Amino acid sequence: MSLSVGQIAPDFVAKDQNGNPIRLSDFRGKKVVLYFYPKDDTPGCTAEACDLRDNYERLQAHGYVVIGVSSDDEKSHQKFIQKYQLPFSLIADTDLTVHQLYDTWKEKNMYGKKYMGTQRTTFLIDEQGKIIDIITKVDTKAHTAQILKS
Image (cartoon, rainbow, N blue to C red; front, side, top):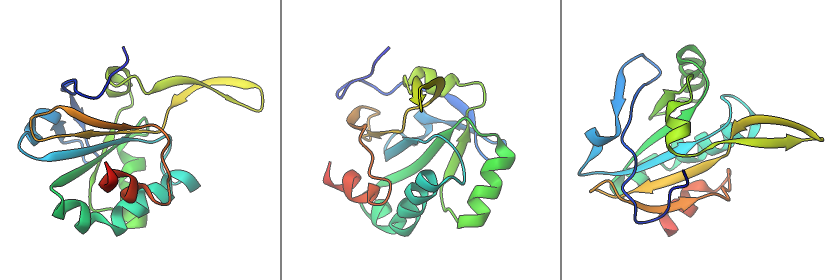
C-alpha cells in the first residue's frame, strides 16, 4: 500500500534502541520526522543521521521530533547512537512491521543482484498525524535542509 501526502500516517507500536515501546500516536500535538534508512553505521546512513544530529536543535525549534527506523536490532542501534551521539530514538524494526505499513521494504538491485531492503524515505507528519510530505530522494548530507524546506 503506497502512502501519499494528506493521508493519516499509519499508527504503530515498535521498540526503540532500549526495548521501550514507541507509539506514533503518542506524538500527536508534535510534528514528526519519521525517517527510514537501510543500515546503522554505513556511509550514507551515518551522513544522514549526523546531519539530523547536527541540526537537531533547529528541527526541535520547528516543532519536530525525529525518529529513525531500520531493520537493525536494538544492540546495533545502541552502538550507532553511542558512536555518533545521536539525540533521537531509533526503532528496531527487525520484523519489518513498520516498513510494511509505510511501504519502504522494496526490491533493490546492486550490480545486477536483486535483494530486499529499505528504500530510504522520510515522512513528515503534522501535529494531527497527517502526512505533509514524503521525501524519497534523500540528500543524506543535507537532509535537514530538505525537511525544513517542506
